[in-house]
Image (cartoon, rainbow, N blue to C red):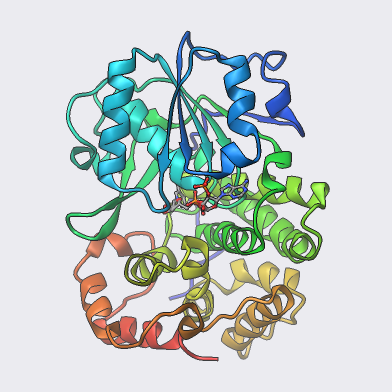
Length: 386
Ligand code: NAP
């Protein structure tokens, strides 16, 4: 089924977050007037915001802040409940999330649970917070998830060993503060993984059933910028201009998925993250070739520009080969090993993963095409191909 370009789309657009982009913004918090209440609760990861001085800079301005600095990667429901309990007891009236997508997501759950009763797992689903959450200032220090401008918190449900989403328009942060200087300390592999995550989000947004004319514009711009800057920044990690554009394009990818949701790439990637600890962005990227070989059959016109940004010629006789070669060219350029085995994934459980995914119909709601268990199994197997 080819989707016609002339199709008239009905859509809505919501992006209520104020974005402040400024190098060294973290040193100018007072003059930027980023204060959303009297006493902030700071949610952050275990190390990086201490090591790069960002946490101290916040505490220099917000003297009475209470800090929760125990957010792990792929944060759990227990971490959300523990931090929310401390926040409730502390009398804080606004939230600062600083770090990668993991602390930003926990910050959103804390904001919601501070004003609503119950536990994190009761809020998996859509728009379940009755009362307005506390206001949130989100300061991303990775350039990947765009969580600073999304209404989602992706949390590991340790009871079911799945990643689930609290999706609620009320947890859009009030302010997203983009300071590229904070991303200069990102290790090579986190730059790689998070850059690929942002690329996945924008590419998936383009081919989502919920894509809109606005999300398409932002997704295309985001793909173009990431493809241009990611290879440069990986070679020159102190390139502040490149860091700025990567942070900006990751934010665009967040605005995109706020409108479009994610598609099967993310749903597939969760299995490798949960079972083998593969970083989120890498896990998604392992499925870009298998899934976009299929997506390009449904939406060739939309993916033509991406093929061209990647420096490959698009051939209408074999669009699958065009997109595959285009992505291979990028992967080669950034030194990304795109076979699942090189990231410690075993091919033993692939059929079980395919069956489990097939049994979760909501994972397919934004995805064009029909996918049987056999087809999903083939996709998992293709993530092992060279
Ligand atoms: P992350 O899990 O937040 O962080 C990954 C690693 O990077 C951590 O070890 C962290 O250390 C480190 N790090 C972060 N900033 C750093 C810096 N400036 N310098 C040095 N190290 C730094 O990674 P992420 O990829 O940004 O977030 C992934 C999570 O976001 C996943 O759970 C994913 O499902 C979720 N996600 C959410 C959305 C959404 O819309 N809400 C969208 C996509 C993905 P510390 O822990 O010490 O800080």
